[in-house]
Amino acid sequence: MKSNIPLQINPKTWLFNSSLSPHLDSFNSFLQSGRYTINTTKRYVACIAHFAYWIDQNKLKVQALDECTVEEFLTEHLPLCNCPSPVVRFQRDLQAALMHMLYVLRQQGIIPKPLVRSDYITEELCRYDHYMLNTRGLSIGTRRGRLHVIRRLLLYKFADRAIVFDQLDPSDIRQFISEQLQLGGSISHATGLVSALRTYLRYRSICGDPVHGLLGAIASPANWGLASLPRSLKLDEVDRLLESFSPTLPSQKRGLAIVHCFLDLGLRCGEVCQLQLDDIDWHAGIVTLRRTKARRQDSLPLPVATGQALVDYICNERPKTTNRAIFVRCLAPHDLPMSVHGIHRVIRDAYQRIGLKHGRTHAMRHTLACRLIDQGSSLKEVADVLRHRSLNTSLIYAKLDNRNLIGVALPWPGSAA
Image (cartoon, rainbow, N blue to C red):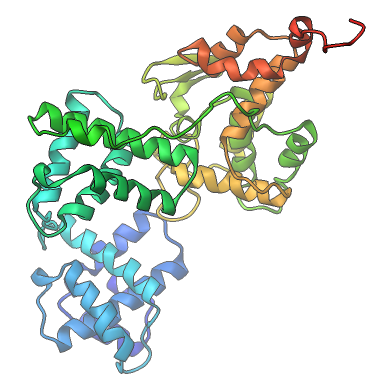
């Protein structure tokens, strides 16, 4: 396979004569399994040739390679690089190729796995994560968000010393909250921030730390949940959104199927990216949601338009893959499902094409609820379709039920009525 490596004479000589030469076949096999394009494979192999020349010049052994070595190559050697041409000097390509090479070497057992840095904050976060998972049963997304906040808090106060909660006072909490709100001042950000702090301090209280006085320093943000109308798309915006997926777009059928899952089924973003081929009963016309926010299994009827969009994508555009996820990556590395960020990107780009300034996928969930209300559905029916555990969650849509609101409206003072 080495003879088929597309390289010029100098880089090819460096690579074949280097200590990385025995691992080239494995590296190529890794790129082929991810179905990287020929051009990308050629570029990454050229990156490895440049790196191989450097490690041989510095007499480094393969067993000593790790992220620190790659960092040294990128930050110290690359800016002053005077290696003989032709060599690749694009940092982004070099970093991607070298991280793939480290992965291959670790898969072969040539180099050890990266050491996890052990310090007071890391150990504390691990203990808290274990508590959230095994005692509270929280999902990975909730735990990740709370750990992100608590890590910032502990670094803010105990960056270079042991964690002693006697040294944490209410003024520290207030100052930390103030600084975090300057980074993002939305109501949802403030609510998540104070919730993460409160749950962590309660955990520390269970551990025996005197933190009751700190809880009093955390004020709830003013938030009137039913003060505004739910943001939804108008009928003409829905039509323009669907029409924006023209055949000239890459992955046009995939984007259209994703939008139908939002508009017709009212799915959440995480539920869309976790849909599996086995979740759809095509004969019965039923979609089974096995990985929901409420951590329960739900079944929904599959609308005709959504089913047709999914079939069109699966049969005519979906890449060949062993992954059972419905929506998969169309770029290397293949055989991986789309991430939540990828789903968000599809919707955000579609909004921009039709001139909408916001990029919230949840607006399409609101759109389905508004359409049901306009068609005469009750709040209970809306709650069932959106799979709300409490009817109170659906109360905001009562503001949109103009037909029934007219019946309870009081006469204007002084009017004939």
